[in-house]
Length: 213
Image (cartoon, rainbow, N blue to C red):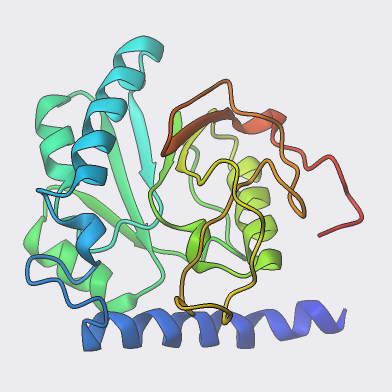
């Protein structure tokens, strides 16, 4: 009960944290306020574009939920190449959503805190560089809400083989490597993965250690 009462406060704190990063451009990229990893020339973007297109073709994907969408600096390249795919971009930063709606009126964007809110169902949930910015309990909450949405697939960036490190420790205090298949998460192995992305069936993403959430 106390935890439920604190949820709005925690959600507000999360929103404030990521809003400050957006307004201050803390990642310092000249092209995208979402950081260097959203720069169209970055290796992670080029790799994500290729994998997204391959997954879309292989599984006949017709709808994508992009969580978080950031400033959608590059996802338009994928959408233009796959015009039949329905798209919804979700983010916790209200000003980002407002700016995206103004810049891309033909696209759909929704304000969402994935840690405590359930998105609309989509065939594919795409999460690029999300979990590395979240606390352990927030990651469990986010994946639980993705499962509750009834969505089919999760394609997410994942640092396979890295031990868990809490946020706020080490040289990068607002981000670190996360492997969802390692403790304390122990989610099932993806049905496909490479060095950067993993593909899971969302209904099967039940953590093996239910007591460690």
